[in-house]
Image 1 (cartoon, rainbow over the protein chains, first blue to last red):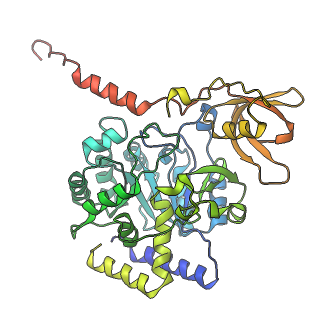
Image 2: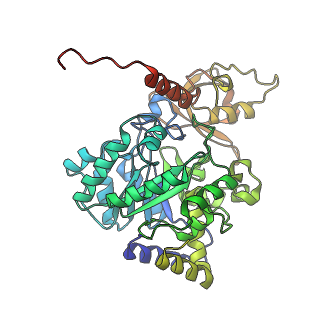
Image 3: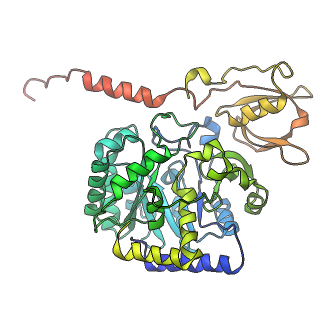
Length: 340
Length: 116
C-alpha cells in the first residue's frame, strides 16, 4: 500500500479523535464538486447531464472553503465535472494545502500539462493528482468515449512526476473487464511511476448513458478476485487493503454513506456521492436530517443493493481498522506483506 | 435510459391520474429545464435542483434559465409543472458512440496522395 505515513497518521489520529468523542457518524473524505462541466462525456458517468445554465455555474472558492471547514474531513477529493476547468482551481488547491488538507484532484488529465506549465500548482505532500485511467489504451479510450485520451493522460502523468508531484490513478471497472488486461494495466501504471492506484466497481447511475455494463455484486467479487489474487509485490494501492478484500468477497461490510459527503452547487447531497435524493443547506443538516436507515444493503433499498463503490465502503473499511485490534492487525498485515 | 422513457414535453394534468407530489418528484429527477406554473398564474422556467417534502412547509428549489437562484417555491404555491426543456439524460450516447466507432473502423481508408 502506498499512502504516505504522514497521511496515514493524519487519518488515524482523526478517526481516533472521533471515536474518543463518541461520534458514530463522521466524514473521512469530502467530495467537493466545484462544477459539473467536463471536457469528456464518459459512458459510465451520470454527473454531467444538466441544462446549460447549470453546467455554466460553479462554486466560489469561498463556498468551497466554507464547506471544507464545516465538514472537517482530513481528506478533500475534488472530482466534478473536470476540476481543471474550474477557473480558480490553483487558488482553491493552495488554500486547501494551507489548511493541511490532503487533496486528491481527480482529473482526466487532458488539461494537466498546460496547467502545470502555467505554474498553477506547486508540489506538496498534501496534493495528489488522481488521474482517471480505466485501463490500458483500448479500454480507457472506450470508457471515456474518445480515442487518444489514454496517451494524453500518460504524457501528463510523466510530466507531473517529472515536476515532483504526487500522482495516483483512479480506475472504475465495469462488467466485462478483462482480469489479465487489468493486471497488465497495473503493471503499466507502476512502470510509469505513479505512487499508487485506486480501484472501484462502477455504479449504475440512473442518468448514465451506459446501463448495460455495471457490475453486480457476485460478478464484482469474482472479477476482483481474479484481478487481485496473488497481487504483484510492486503493485501499490492508495486505499485500504480491507476495502480491496471486500471487493474480492473476503469481507462483508455495510455502507457508510456519510463517510464521503458530497458538496456541490446544489448544496450537501443526500445521501451520498452517487445518489441524489435531495440537498441539505448545511453539513449539520445533512447529518441530522437524512434518513440514513433508508440506505445501505440492509435497508433493502434497490439502489443500494449491488453497490460496492469506494465512497460508501472505503470509510467502512477504515472504520473497521480502528474499531478492533483484529481490524488493525489485519490492515497492518496486508499493508506490510502486500497480500490480500 | 432510452428516448422513449424521457418525460420531455410532458404536460401533466394534476388530479387526473397524477398528483402534484408525483409531478414534483418527476421534475426533481428530470435533467432538463421545466416550467413551474404557480397558483397565481405566474411562470418560472428553470431547473429543479432540490425538493424537500419532510419539512413543515414542503418546497422546491429552482435555478432559472439565467442560472440565478435557487428560488424556493412552496408546494402549496405550485399549480403544475411542465417538462418543457430538453432532457439532457435522454438517449443512449454510449450505443451511439459504439456505432460511430464501428462505422469509423469499417470506413475505407483514404489512399495517400501521390508522392506522399
